[in-house]
Amino acid sequence: MALVCWGAALKQWDVLKELSPAEQEEIRSFIVFWSGYSALYITSRDEVCGIGNNGVNLNLLGLTGTHYRVNKADQPVEIKCLSKKGLVAISMGVYLGAALDREGWLYWWGCVCENYGEIRTPHLASDSPRYTMVSCGAMFIAALSSDGWVYVWGRFWNTEKFFKEDPLLTSCYVTYLSCGVGHLVMVSSDGQVFTWGDGRHGQRGYSTYRYPEHDDIVRRAEIEATCSVVKSGGHSTIFLSKSGQVWACGGNNSSNGFLGVESTDEFVLTPQQVLLPEPIMEVVTGWSNTLMTSYAALSENGSVYVWGKTKEPQLVTSVGTSLIGNFLGLSTPRDTMIQVRPPALVPPTSSTPSSDSDQQDAPKKNKFGNLKYLDLIKNHFNII
Image (cartoon, rainbow, N blue to C red):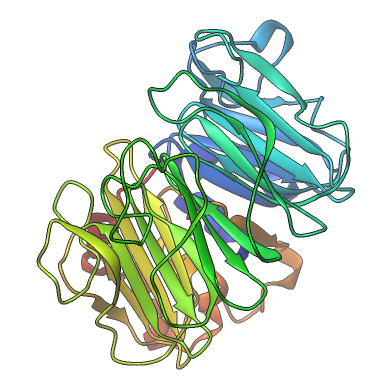
């Protein structure tokens, strides 16, 4: 998945402000993570660079050589083992990262070893170039192969079992997947939803889940709607149906984030419809270092709704913008590459463009410059 912003919007992210104007102009896609303190980006020359927090015990930026396991990269560092690969996706977990190139080769790095404490630089996770999608949990990754199979690597949170490109048995061809902290959600070609992993908060989407017996078993979520996309929160799952309805299950409290459903139960075991007033075409999630999840949805009419810190979805703008306007200056949505439109493409009438939303008229643009509006968004999206 990708969202789009204008090149001038890069200045909205503090970690990217450290780059020179020339370096900013070279960026073609990026992600921001670790509560907004880290970034990975791809340049017009297909160089992959990292800047910001790296973590001496994580190496989340995938740095090599003399920069390996430095606590922070104050200047951009090229990750040569990922450069010139034609990367199309980057996903970040809590303890590891993963990337996918246009040929289907899958890479991973960080805490990706069977022995705790061992840190690896980016390297191939598979000897076969067959993958089309990747998503990171806290300590594991899941990838979708071109023939509709799902494979997993790593381990569940605080468990000993280690997966090494293990296939998951589903009864249908899978077309989409998303990882939470310790669970995985998959959509089949006929719109069914299957889950795997931890379900103690209700994120697996069925009422008969048992811990830990069911963790390594794929089960169908109890949702009758035909789904097109699923998004994992830290301990929750969001379902987008083909008719534009949004459903949710999992943690539903101030610690995990509120699901925006009618139920007041702390853990919602089966999917319930989110209280949105109009059909939705796109949803995104973000979960923080406290594992509290925030949610955003874009309606077919261009309205943006957010929830998670609030019990019900809040309309934050109806200006016909895209979702990226809700993440300016913050960590970007999970498993989402932000594509940068070169400055040369910015319309001459837009003197201070901030995102693709700047194609609106002046009153609409002013909403994005309004401090109260930005404060509202930041209050909702304190994500990693």
